[in-house]
Image (tube, rainbow, N blue to C red; front, side, top):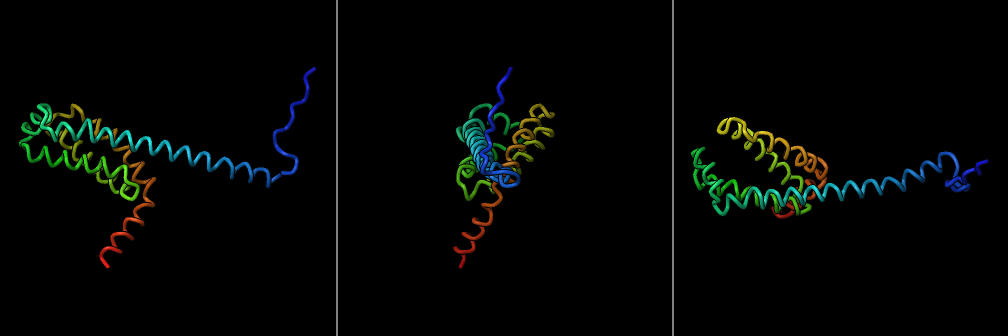
Length: 158
């Protein structure tokens, strides 16, 4: 015969109080895990935009230079896009700028998508779309920082 399994719920909490207590203790753990995961995604995206995307443009690597020359944008366009990507990568790591940076990088990815379709026959058009998904998630999840940013900008003006 098997022995009855002891209950893990304390006998002092019963009914709605027990479920409320377990819900409140589980919510911070899930919220903390989500914040850590989101922060990890932000760091990965920042590294990607700084190293894999901006750096080749800023050092005029032959692959980037050839692409921008083919589009007719030249070095000025290449360096401009590189600086925007690097600024976005850095801003993704600054709490008050995270949402704005993710939104701006998403807009840049819309441009990259259009460029891939029009100049390069859609060869790598999926890449900017794939990058937009986590960027838009970050922009939405960190939108609360926008109020703080606006408050800081308004304080400086006054």
